Amino acid sequence: MKELKNIAAIVTGGASGMGAATARALAEEGCKVAIWDMNIEAAQKTAQEISGLGIQCDVTSEESVLSALESSAQAHGVARILVNCAGILRGARIVGREGPASLDDFDDVLRVNLLGAFNTMRLVSHALSTSEALNDEGERGVIIHAASIAAFEGQIGQAAYAASKGGVVSMVLPAARELAQFGIRVMGIAPGAVATPMIGEISDDLRASIESNTPFPKRMARPEEFASLALHIINNDMLNGEVIRLDGGTRLAAK
Image (cartoon, rainbow, N blue to C red):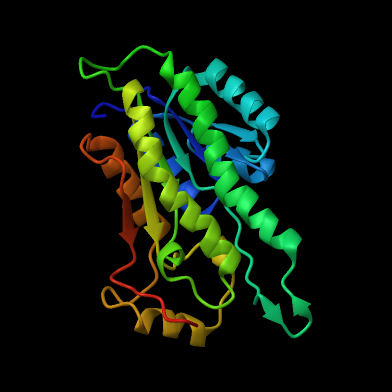
């Protein structure tokens, strides 16, 4: 997709972090951006900064996503770009000092990170499937899922998060194969540690450990680097059915 001016885009989890950076990058390219987030105040604040649309949306709910999709379409037209950044991170050992890990927490992480990604993809791609093609090749749109390198090297305490992101990674290729008939590409980005609000305030020692274990550059990734890669994926039509690591060569240790 080479020309992005006036193209409608949706960014889930777009109120902050990688999602907000991606929303800004898309807006700078001329896209009409709808930010879907549970935090409506933050979503509207970020949307106002980029002349976009902020919508409260629970990605795990069919009703909520359909409502957000309708509002987005009324304002901007059919969304050709979906970037799924909505996600939560909860760490816990399977067997901890207080007993087994919380099943509710495990379920919540899988619902938001995996089910939410599938839910938005299925509903957005359904709307796209009947839209007019953008060019002679039959291109209609592109979907990008935020995964994580934890999908490949989950650390101790990351069973829920790694499982959810592993599911996202495994979903990319079959989704790309299936949606190819509609001219929809599906890709994933698997970042390492990114300096976002989701990672929270970390100690200097932990930051130093993360940086020392990153071959190059020796730092955490910036949200803008995720956004830059998302833009490249959108612009490069031959990128499809793959998950790209964004980690400076990092390979996670057990803990």
